[in-house]
Length: 258
Image (cartoon, rainbow, N blue to C red; front, side, top):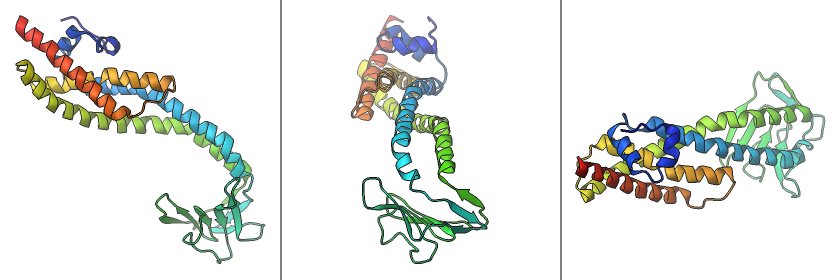
């Protein structure tokens, strides 16, 4: 059989019957290494797009908060500021607090406030999206926080963000697609019956993994061009099932000629 490289697969998967015959008859394994390769191509532009949005948000919004931050001194876990407490850092253009600094002990929780962050004399309390609070003990911490320090932290975060994000989203996406591949392979057994061919499950898994290529390529193009792709998960799965049907049918032609 004619050998196909991973690069060739990116376009032969759209139309070539001989390619899908090669995948079923000559490729080894379950095709998951190939699937990971294709997903890498998707998440490179997607990560770049997300990073650009985060950078833009930090550049536009962060200074509005940072300029309100006083010099905060933490010595042996004890917090102090020179300003009168409680000190409020407000959401820009709103009269509601985002963060509160109170070392006096008058405000000890976020339960009766709209703020998401509270810094007491010895704790940092953060409220998440479900309105549950988590307290971090500052015991043993020695630190001086000012606006320059926060800007440096944001700059470091912006630099590290894509490095941390890429492997995380790649692994998450890979595991999600693996589950979809096994589900598709199950449907593929019905396609094999429809075409009256005997094809083992391992080959069906391999064909299913490769059948996701056109949908992933389309997602990559949308990400690279920053074009919205609504309902991309169900649509991509349906496209992949369509190509799996085509792939199984392509192998039925091989079985008839042999």
